[in-house]
Image (cartoon, rainbow, N blue to C red):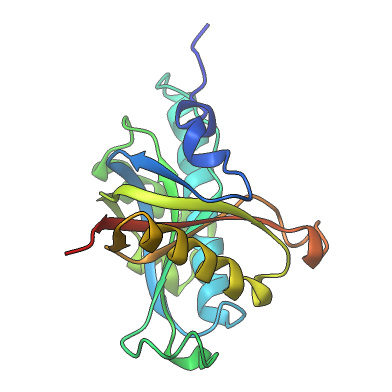
Length: 205
């Protein structure tokens, strides 16, 4: 019987953070990615989520049917940044930029994307975000991370705690802030939402 890949188990240390900060070494990982800008509640971000998951699940079932290795679809993740560094502290969400993404196993190939998008087109379930979907490797390396529990709107102090921890250990940010969403907001109350906060770092000069 073919073994199913579960990336959460393969990379357990990346998906099992605690509420106290710690360092992890993140290997190069492959993702379906879609870029956008604006607040997460806007239609653009919601379309990106729908495009990522419809593509991931359609591909999963197609590969399984073809006799290629089956896999568990990974959780939603996102990178966040802004050209104006004050935009997050001042909650100016129209200035936020993001990359929504879902991790993919190594046996997923670029050619698989075209076949999957064609199948989604045939089924009539594509949206504009599908046209921006790509498969890309993300290299973060050394990173600080912690588990945050609570509303997405209130994670600012935990982000500050994470950055302060890294600075105290002689590191500075070296990449975009990274969220890994471990809860489904449709089924979880805001105060119980679990999000892993990650910040790639490099030694401070």
